[in-house]
Length: 148
Image (spheres, rainbow, N blue to C red):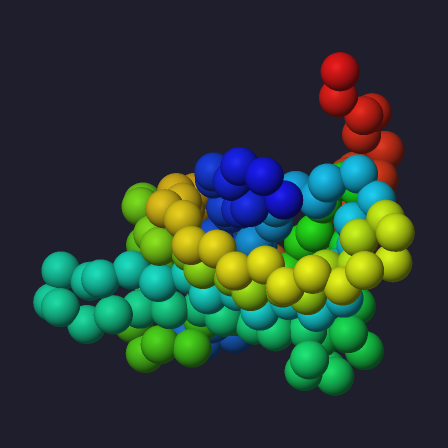
C-alpha cells in the first residue's frame, strides 16, 4: 500500500442510537492485495482537552458476522469504526492509525502499520443500517475501473 492508506476524507455519521457515531474508514489496496485482518483508530483532541475516538477491528467476530467489513482485492477496504469515547467526534481534522495483515498476490502475508492525518466530513443523513451501507460501498468499489 504505497502512499496514503486511508482516504483523505472519511465520512462521520450520527446513528439512531444515543451517543453513537460511526466513522466509515476506507483505504486503497495494491493490485493483488487483500486484507486478512485490520484494526483502525480515528482520534481527535477536543477543545476541553478530552480526546475522542472511534475504533474497530476485524478480529471481533461480530464485525465479520454482521457484514460490517469489506475488502475488494486490488481495490480497497471499508471498515466502520464505532465511537468509544464519551464525547462525540466533530467534523474536521483527525488523526487516523491502522495496522493490517495483508495477503499479497503471491500468497505471502505482510503486516502494514500506518498513521495519517485525515478529514472527517459530517454526513447529512443518519446511518441506521451499517451492513447495508458497507455493502453499497463495496459494490461501488468493486465496480470502479482500474486506474491508468
